Image (cartoon, rainbow, N blue to C red; front, side, top):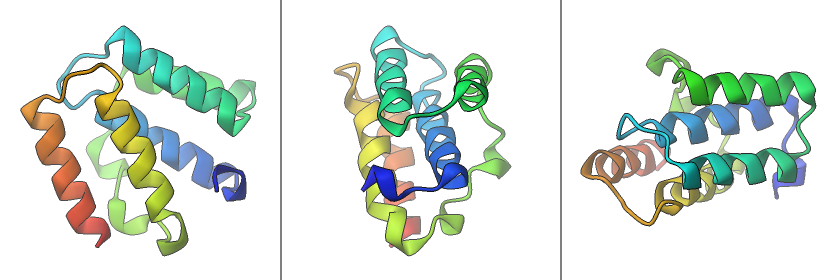
Length: 108
């Protein structure tokens, strides 16, 4: 399913993943590794990879991660990827749990 995402959707997915990695205000090594593996799986080019690395350095602005803008066909992929980064460090912070619940609700 990841291979069905176009360039814009791949970057949007990674923006959401990075945004959720920041939910507890800390990027842990396991979350960085999850993001690195996602970048490889998505086959991001150098410019896209640099953008993702920037989102790991500074979180995406909240107004740029609008769940309602995710196409219906891609919502399952986004949910699975976001859930993956949340559980990647073995701990689910209350902020992560609440943000994910809201995310799921907004996606329907």
